[in-house]
Image (tube, rainbow, N blue to C red):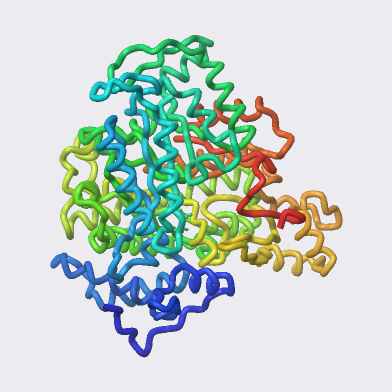
Length: 580
Ligand code: UDP
């Protein structure tokens, strides 16, 4: 039942892009495809449904009605937004609120096709799925029951890909998958090449799971063993440097595959007693155990400036509210499988992150690629990590710790107790940042002025408001300038703009790959899960440059890396100038 909207509720003040996106993808529609709610009703539906969970907990200091209004105000202020499935489905019949899932794929027909079905159900509800295909026997292995031969991980991935193609998420979002293969799987070379043809496995991001022994073998220039997962037999050896070089070459050509550092991800697994982490969600920011799901939420740093710094008091307030919100979402959500419900409710992972970081830096006059920028990133994320843990501890007192707490690393380290096995994740915020009208995640701006392609080829033209304000203040605003910026994206080479503005208003392509990566590492240092970040490279970057980036990511303690060399694929989501 849609919640009754109180008459005195403030009306959300939405930017034009947000209105378009909400109308197209978020507002509930009737059988005739027409919206049956407006934006105010949408945010109230979500606030009301999530706050209603408060009644489960007699120890809560909040009245559900009061909390619903507080959540509503928090969302319509755009200081915090939950991930898209929560906005789409909270308080509806579908009721599936998490963005991220990991589903295991076992080495049998039954298990493979169960996973295809489970993924389809998740996609239908608006979630993305990650899978490790590492358990599947390699191509040409014997199949005991038939005497035939196995077709291997990559051929099965095509089935997942086709199934995904047919299921539009919640009627609006197309399914997204992550496919992972361990570097010591005998089919690794085929996997590394599996996206080399344009359009192949188009519903997958792929990543190779690198292990410590493999990285050491690369360093030493040694060979390493390929092992068949079903028999544990050795299936030959490959030279680690050659495999690493192939990874680099393919990423240079097309951006795929990315890499994840599997041992490092597992070193941060808060519940190793429940098993190993083998995959992440589609955009890589959320490592999860098999059958685990996680709901995400993002704080908008663009709105948290105070004087010449950050409004720490407000950041603390919104962090505590956001943790309560996300913890309630776990119980408000209906999951597509009982196993998922059990896993999620026993570990209660949530992923609070940030968006609008680049906008905050613009307002503070701090270049993204500067020591000051990195220091601020660490300070902010350290603060959110600390406060989110404090909030989770508070919730544990009110509601009890997550049921697997005693089996977690926190119990053995005598920390907590906490309500949530993890509290922080930095999501891409692809859609949330459009709704909030801010820069996405912790990324620098792609361009100061650009055309964004969204949904069915529609185009939204945007200029960064902080940039416009700064050029006006510097009295160099002119139609000619804005045209030039829109065409070029960057102002690095527009020499009639004052030097200090050119230094602050840097875009993704002005920033060196090393600076991109250092920013990822700065946020990762204080994030439980992982950080969604693309290391942008200019078109003329070499394979050697990518090799260096991968190695540096390993040394800086990142959990994975995604690189993107400008122009290496024909279809880009964001375009500047002629490409728009
Ligand atoms: N995701 C998905 N399909 C999409 C976009 C996102 O399944 O079209 C999932 C995926 O797991 C991704 C996560 O949602 O890693 C978060 O993405 P993002 O922050 O961009 O989502 P938003 O909440 O902004 O829509």
